[in-house]
Image (cartoon, rainbow, N blue to C red; front, side, top):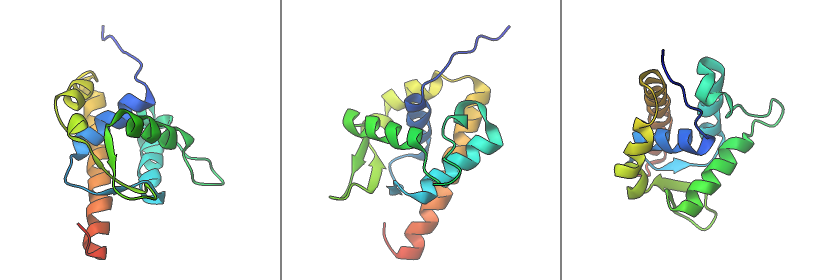
Length: 132
């Protein structure tokens, strides 16, 4: 019998960002919310809590979790508007790995899939804007 453990939204986001890594510049915007909303629809479970509001396309859970990670130093904001951010060394390193490894095999597989979607979305944005 497998033991399941509930994971907070912050832990799910942190584990996902750990898998995204430090080399991708992310943006707290529609594209990030869409990746998480798509994951909520496709995978449910861990990601269901990140579904966005059906009229406003905003995920309060994602926004609040990002704010917690910002205050904890798990992400590094890059501009005054605090729109752009990168994964901190803390999240990319042993702490993020510990949180990621606290998930079961199936859950880690889902986290990796969502992280790959985030990398794909934001690497494409970086290439099209010429930013890095």
